[in-house]
Structure formats: C-alpha cells, structure tokens
Image 1 (cartoon, rainbow, N blue to C red):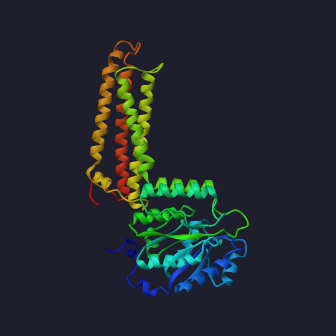
Image 2: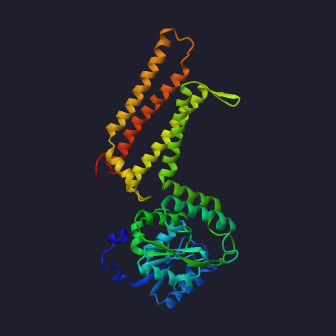
Image 3: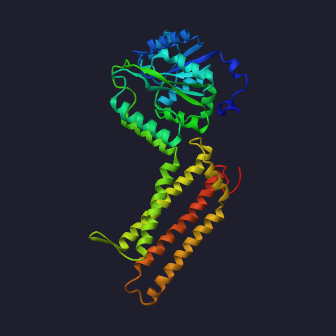
Amino acid sequence: MRRASEARVAPDARARDPYELSIVLPCLNEARSVGRCVDEAMAAAVAAGVAAEVIVADNGSTDTSAEIAEAHGARVVRVALRGYGAALRGGVEAARGTYVLFADADGQHDFDDLAAFVAKLREGYDLVIGNRFAGAIEPGAMPASHRYLGNPMISGLLRLLFHPKIHDAQCGMRAFDRRAFAAMDLRTTGFEFSPEMVVKAVRHGLSMTEVPIHLKRDDRSGPGHLRTIPDGWRHLSFLLMCSPNWLFLAPGSVLLALGIALVAWLFVGAHPIGHASLDTRAELVGVVVASIGFQIASLGLFARVYSYTEPMRTRSRTLDRRLRQVKLEQGLALGGLLALGGLVGLGVELVPWALAGFGELHARRAVIFWSLWLVLGVEVCFSSFFLSMLGVSRRTWIGERW
C-alpha cells in the first residue's frame, strides 16, 4: 500500500532531486548565530555522508543575518509573510532535497544529531521529530515554564486527542520526506505550525518517530521569539479546534443531559437540598442548561461535517456510518415530534388557564417541562436543515454514500 505522501509525486521524483537533504533554518535577526549554524550544518552533513544544501528562510530580518548566511555558503530565501510557520513553508518551497530538516538559526540545535534524522528517513519514516527531553538539555537552554509545564501539557494534550507517539511536539528540529510535507497541506503561520504538522501527519496516516537530541543555550542577546502566554494559547486553541469531539460534542452532550435530568427531576415536584428547596426557578435553569448544551453539541456536528474537506483531524468511521444513515427528513421528524409534544403539553396546561381568565398559574412546573421539549424540537429542526446544507456545500451528502 502506498503511503499518503506518495500520491502527489511522480515515481521518478527522487531521481531528479539534486540533494538528499535540504537543511532549512528559519531566521529573524539572528546575525550573532546564523553563520555558525550554517557552518555546523554543512559540516554535519559532510560528516554523515549526506549530499545537502542549507537554506536560510529570512523572515524580514533588519540586521545583517541574510548577508552573513550568504557569506557562509547558505542559499537565502526571503519570505515576506511573517511568522515561524510561514518562514518554514517558504524554505521548503525553495528546497531541492529529497528530505528536509528544520533547525533553528539561534544556535540551540546540535547539528551532530543530523545523522540520526537522516537514518530514520532512510528507514522509510515520513516524519522524524527531535525529543529534547529524551536527549540532553543544557542549563538555561529552556525556560522552566516551558520545560515543566507548557511543553508537557501541549504534547500530552496532543497525544490524548490524536494518539501520536510523540513526546516533544513543539521541538523545532525535525525532518521529513518532502512528499509527505506536500501531502500534509500545512496552513498555520505561527509557532502552532509544529503541532499542526503532527496533527496532519496523523490525519494522513504518515509514519512518525522521534530521536533524542541535544538542546544548547541560544546565542541571543535578548528574549526569544516565542511568547509564552500568547503562543501557548495559540497552540492550545489550535489543538482544540482540531478536535470537535472534545471542544463541542463532549461538553455539549453533558450539559444537555444535565439540563434534561434537572427538568425531569423537578417536574414531579420540589426537592429539598439542605436548607434550600429546588423548585420552578431551578427547573428554568435546567431548560437554559439543556438548550445551551444542545447548541454546543450542534456546533460540534457542524464542525465535524465541515472538517471532511479540511484535513484537521482523523475521520471517525463511526460518525461516517451515522451520517450515511441519517437523513434530513429523520432530523425534521424527530424535531417535529419533540415540538409537537411540547405544544400539546403546553396546550393541556395553558388552555384551561386561559379559559379561566388568566388568573394565577398553578401548573408552572408542567409549563416549564413542556417548554423544554418545544425549544429542543425547534432547535433540532433548524439544526437538521443547517447540517444538511453544510454537508451539501462540503460535498458530504448527508444520508448518501460518497
């Protein structure tokens, strides 16, 4: 069976590559270190017996980084679109090697690790990611907040949601088959580019592994480009957006179930809780919670259908089967029955009250109970229409095989 990454490249594409490896260094004002990095990268490639080129993807440097890189023998590619991910994509577009290795231009990465990456690629892996935690981290090379909190949390969340066997998803030193990179169709422009690569590799069934690397102190005189809180949030929000089940369906379903349970519990009468008593006001809260939960869960379904043509996450075979079985008319029938039941129940309670001259309403608990089903029924009907419209627009015909 061919790997997903092979689908976009002609069989003889490897033979036309003038280099086995392209080493891409993203650069933004790294005049203090970029020259040494270029020299070390070239020397490591020679020592490993790898025919390689070094590309410096300059992302708008205002110092002499580009000139220094060229003087040391690198090919400089100027990338206008700002951002770490944008710089890396620009470097890959200019690459002429069968494989590509990413490494930072700030002096943090030890290019003696290059041979281990190439060896794994030659074994047939599509993506090889460095693991700083399995290797060595020099004192002061990584802030404590990144080492003990940020990196483990993001990598752990990524493993929980997408199940890759990767333990340092933010590591900037990684290598891949250039065909695999084309198949991944990466979109982000910032530092979330790193976890996106792992997510897309899972999505396309690409083979991944990791190798231990050595992380050194960088040569910067000021703070690094990574901003702990803003970029940490971008990583976290990106992973959640790639997983509608966890972001929408799970919390929405829980709220919906809790709201329905609360309304049903209070429908039979008030219930004392300690010194308080839960009655119709709490029942109204249940209606609100159930409605909010349904809306959140609906957004999850919309996101899942939308993602069919957006390679954001692994497709669910279970959901595939459900969508093939469910039709618009079934959703409308369910919503119609719920709404009709709510209307009938409200009629039974409100008509006698109206005929009596709209005096004091004694059936408030029942009115709230039937109002819940009327609200949910209307929401199911309109959500079914929108889900079907979205499916058609994304070439996912709900209820049909594709």
